Length: 389
Image (cartoon, rainbow, N blue to C red; front, side, top):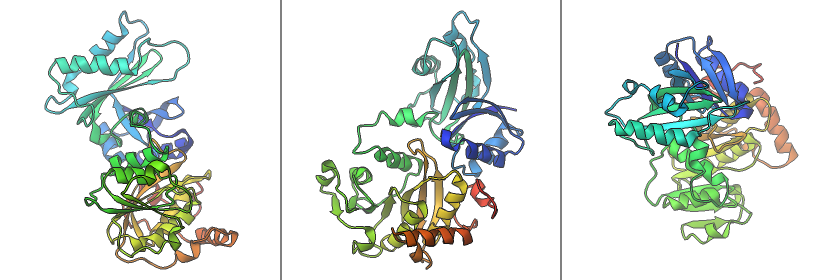
């Protein structure tokens, strides 16, 4: 069987490996190369494992890439030349564009003297000179190289099969221009992972907008943004004529029903309180229109918390995607779509006082998400009342 490299946030290691075993119960972990990287061996053929992984819609596994060659460079006269020679061009499609993506993982002891960038440039240039067409922004296929001490783990694959487009999204996105806040990168990344068809000069509602990073991103895409937050926005955001600041909580903002093409929410709230607030804001969103929110995972049982949050959201939304993105830390980003009708029941969960917190706690004990609705990930669909993870 072809082995694979999986990446995930270190905080979510346990649930990421649980996703692996939900997809392939017989898979084994060969080595944990870093707190965020595992080398795994599926129990099924490569094509079947890739199919299962992509159909499962994993939340916590960020990227997966095959390992076709495991190379020991310790005794190589020229380690770079031996690495390049180990890449079999017949594993690539000459009719499709390619890129090389390399990661140098932390390892104890000595290792190769060159870095990831050296591999990308030298291997990529060699393949390009032999007739392959390079595309660094949106390649169809990728040659992945993981450097671990003196070892190189090499694989070729279609980008569409790898869950994420890039082996190291954080390194790529960190090259973007400076932002109003770090949160801005989260929305930029989400809009790449889930490219939404938004109307030109459409209207967006940003709930809990301060200091305005998400409003800044949306206005930069030409949207008219209503930024709702009692707190101040950054001067750069306020100066944008496409942004209107409403100094209020969203429940007191007096907005027009069905008037927005997108609602976004990155509030630092208890997740089911944030979800209930999103249900209240759904009335302002056109039926069928998208919404994006982050779910702050503040407990040691992330699946249970996310299931409860999704159960609240299902009053007003279909959940179309859930991902722990590269710029998420201990949180998950959700892609939503407003249902034609909003079901009552979320109203009792809104509020910032201790009584409201107690109502939410009680609600969580007796409500479960509907696994038949939306594109729910495998580990969420396979819930049980006693599941604590």
